[in-house]
Length: 144
Image (cartoon, rainbow, N blue to C red; front, side, top):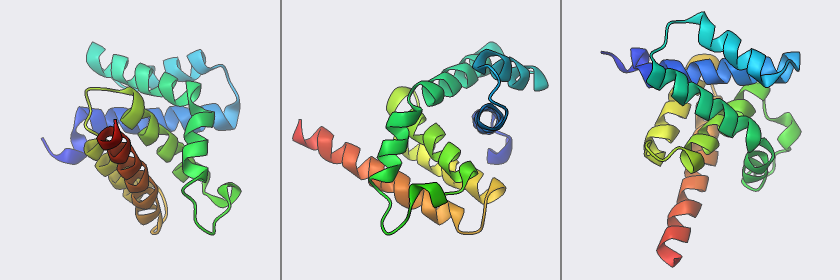
C-alpha cells in the first residue's frame, strides 16, 4: 500500500476537510463530523481516529493557535493561510493528544498533506513550526 493511500493519511485529510468545513460554514461540529465520515467507507478504527482527532482539534484550537503564534518569527498569525493554520492545529493536536502516533510521524504527515493541498512554501512553513514544537517537547521531557 503506498503511503498516499495509507488509511491514516486518508483519515487526516478527512479531518482537515472537516476542520475547514467547520470553520467556513459555522455548522454544528457533530453535523460536520457526520458529513465527513459519511463521505467514505471507514472501518471503526478510522472512524474513531477521525472523531478523536477532529474533537481534539476543535477542543484545543485556542491552545494550538497559541503554540503557533509563539513560533512565528516576523510574521502575523492573521497572515497565515487558513489551510495551513488548520493543518497545524490538526498536527499539534495529534502530537499532544493522540498517544499511539509518534510525533515525527504526525509532523511528516502534516508536511506531506501541506505539499498536496497548500502552497509551495507551506510544507517548509509547517515543518518549521512543528519541528520547533517537537524540540520544545523534547526539552521538557529531558528536564522532567
